[in-house]
Image (cartoon, rainbow, N blue to C red; front, side, top):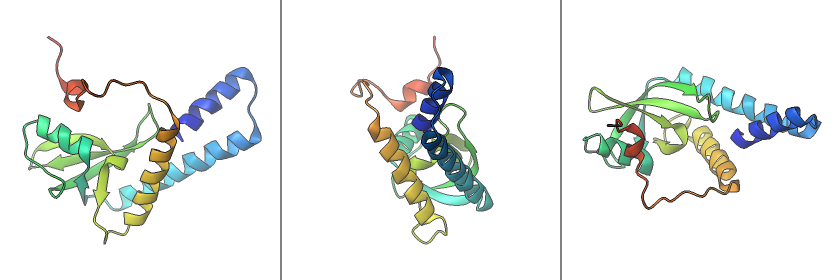
Length: 148
């Protein structure tokens, strides 16, 4: 969806907007918006962090692992990527923002299947893009450090 949006904008700029691209874009927008509405209906709810979320929280000084329960207290759409982002609390006062795709719900949660399908769709879209990132020197915590 994220990349379809950029293709839509590019198509508008070039004057080559096709009806098929337009319908794909709006299906994804409505799908993500529908998912956001569903997520907000179930707030707050328990989740578990995946790799990047666990790494970020650990870099903030808290001990968590993949079995540590976290709490989603709010959700919104990212202006930049269009992805659903959740405000996650941990150990009382700690808060981070994490993409819904980096969180896991209990298998018994009513949104489990919908969130899993959403995650698979986003991962598939991101997999289509070729990114040249030097991952060996990049840490998520680097994004949150203050410049001196």
